Amino acid sequence: MAVPAWLWIATIAGLLALLAIDLFIVDRKPHEVTIGEAGRWVTFYVAVAVAFGLGVWSMYGGTYAGEFFAGYITEYSLSVDNLFIFLIIMSTFKVPAVHQHRVLLVGILMALVMRGIFIAVGAVAIAQFSWIFYFFGAFLIYTGYKLAKTDHDEEEEEFKENAALRIVRKIFPVTDQYHGSKSFLKIDGKRFVTPMFIVMVAIGTTDLLFALDSIPAIFGLTKEPFLVFTANAFALMGLRQLYFLLGGLLNKLVYLSIGLSVILGFIGVKLILEALHSNALPFINGGQPLPVPVIGIEVSLSVIVGVLAITTVASLIKVRRNPEAAKQVAK
Image (cartoon, rainbow, N blue to C red; front, side, top):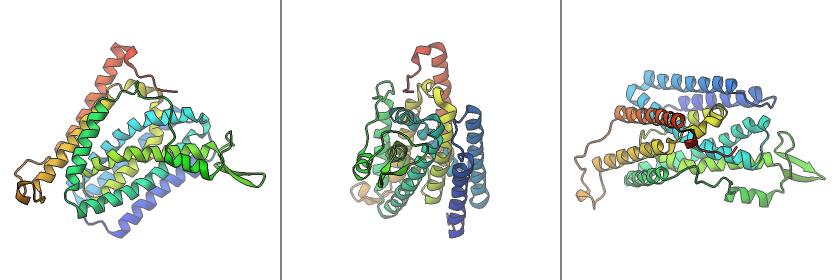
């Protein structure tokens, strides 16, 4: 897939334009996002992603378009699990409802930049080291296994600050309270950061931790850096609106972790089969490829969509029959 420089530039410019509209026009006056507003924005971002995928189809064919859609759906689905952590962060830092949209927007923008670096490093690693797919595959299978055993009810409801936040606190003194939507301010000539900035860093760096499984997962669906980046970008851009749309509905997705674990395990197996099919490691079959089946993108897309559909329906049926099964997420 030969992607010219102008297409990269046009795509990044388009994404930045969408972010600028959201930041400087939609969020010009801080307000509490309603479910209706969030629903319209989620629909808009999904429609833009679909239009982009159709554009890929027209320029590069159905295979690459299928890879984009499979990657986008997978990244968006994995991002839903992030929302549980975002809820805990918002609660821990007591972010005012009117400022939550800006916090998510800036935090996710930070995450997008860092994911871009991850993607570039991953693309270089794939080009240089053929064995990386064995590692990615094993890592995804292990992550899927761990995720299947995870229960949000058992997770700690208190957010533990990571190294990045501790470094920020060492460099800058932090005010005791919010000062509107300001992230920085001077008090008696001394520069402070507000809790607004701290929570933005918390959102961005926490999302980066989730990228440790989502980036290998999407590389298992497409090897094209352009598709990996755009699928991540569209998934992240629609994530903050999904946060306001789902809200309390998150606690009804009781089988979400199981569904995501199946998807991660499936992609892990797909990666290992592809690695064996094009094997070049001398200690495996004498460095020769093995005649193993590979999983096409059509099958991958069908499995991902099917698992998510079954997971969602099964979760809603479970909660309807047994309301006590709903997860209690920190408000």
